[in-house]
Image 1: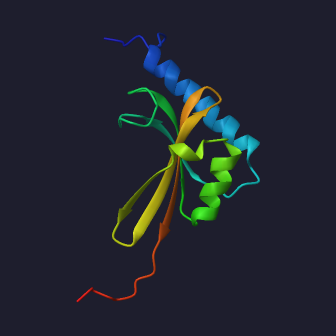
Image 2: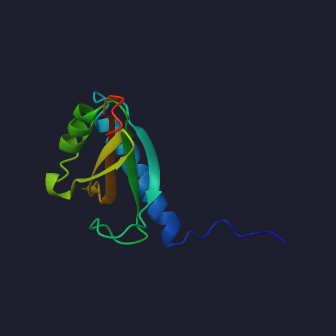
Length: 119
């Protein structure tokens, strides 16, 4: 039995649109520090992005200055920025829409380990 691969549903079209936006974003901002790019299906609440939407995720592991460069370049509202932590690793994440698709930019940074256990 052969599977018909000529039909594309809404999810595939959304993925194609996200991939196109990713290429456009990276091409337009080739002068910025290189992120780790990914296509991403947004399933978390409270980001202002519709549940299940396909979009672009950019991760930056070189400190907050690179995060801020990308956030500004994509014109993501600072009010959408969220933060998180795990041990000495911290991150900021900004959400928005660029080229018609949802975008998430996350910048990771670490706090110095002082060895202080709080005792």
